[in-house]
Amino acid sequence: MSVNLKGNILVTGTNRGIGLELVKQLAEKTGPETQIYASCRDPEGTRAEALRNVANRFPGKITPIKFDTADEDSISAAFQAVSQKLGAAGLNLLINNAAINKPSAPGSLSATRKQDMMEVYETNVAGPFILTKVFLPLLQKAANTRDEGDDMSCRRSAIINMSTVFASVKKCPETFHMAQMYPYRTSKAALNMLTCCQAEDFRRHGILVTAIHPGWVQTEMGGEQAPLMPQDSVAGMLRVMSTLSNKHSGLLLDWEGNTIPW
Picture 1 (cartoon, rainbow, N blue to C red):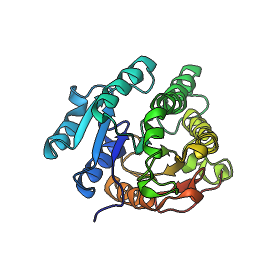
Picture 2: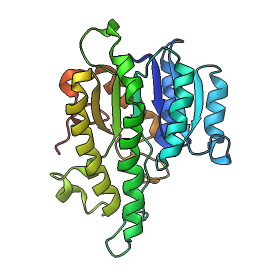
Picture 3: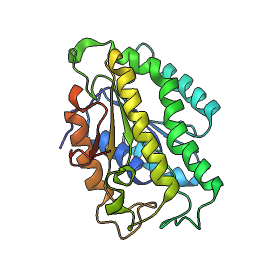
């Protein structure tokens, strides 16, 4: 099944899990005009072998990009590399997927150090903030292309921040017993506020900003007990992204398109 996405797409954290599956399905389900920029810390390293294999299956469609979302200099270098590849074109879709969780689940209060909190915030909040700030000119350039009319969409210019139901303040009493995960929960709650701020700020540019919860997925972070496979989660999220419009900017949705309360 194809998805209604196109153009130039940048996905972060693509060497494994949801990020790798996003790259794979975007390559499979979009047309030849779509270019995918797949970022990770070390595209040539052993942990990126699966990403290289996917890129080799779609020659010319996937470009691995080296950068670390916790390193501002590496983000600037990645911006220069992507800009050179894009030429006169803009960036249509930025998917902020890269994230970490410390300490490992259940992440009780007693097991959590200040260093854990700071490292998780740096990657999960400051990373998407700086990345979006640096790449904003390319998103604006895409938004100024009126092929899609005046409506905001992921085909025109959009930012998707990968969040979680664990970041919902309202739902915390329902979910806290599953895993305490203090740094992860609070960092993603901050990412939700970042999403709202960006949605209000970038509306004037015609850039859509939405947060999406991928579900509890069987990944290195999600664990083997998770009920959802990456393939199903990503297929659902791509369907949701294909339908997003003005009314969805500033919301937190799940992988099936349901609204999650803040």
